[in-house]
Length: 67
Image (tube, rainbow, N blue to C red):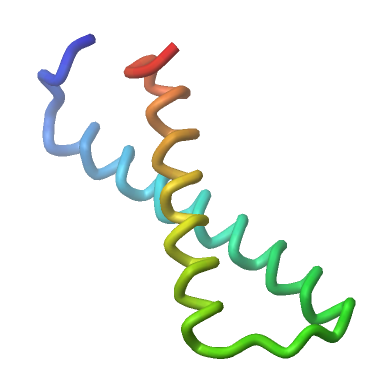
């Protein structure tokens, strides 16, 4: 495991993490809207947080931090 990265590399990792979270959140939101399930703000925050966590795990996997 190596943590020595340049600023550009860290920025690209952050962008990958956020974009993965946005894609996951968007897909979940479209699915919920298709099924017509009403969501509260707290539910949306939970979905966004879980999406960010999944995006972070996926990005770490792609960066070979975790195996």
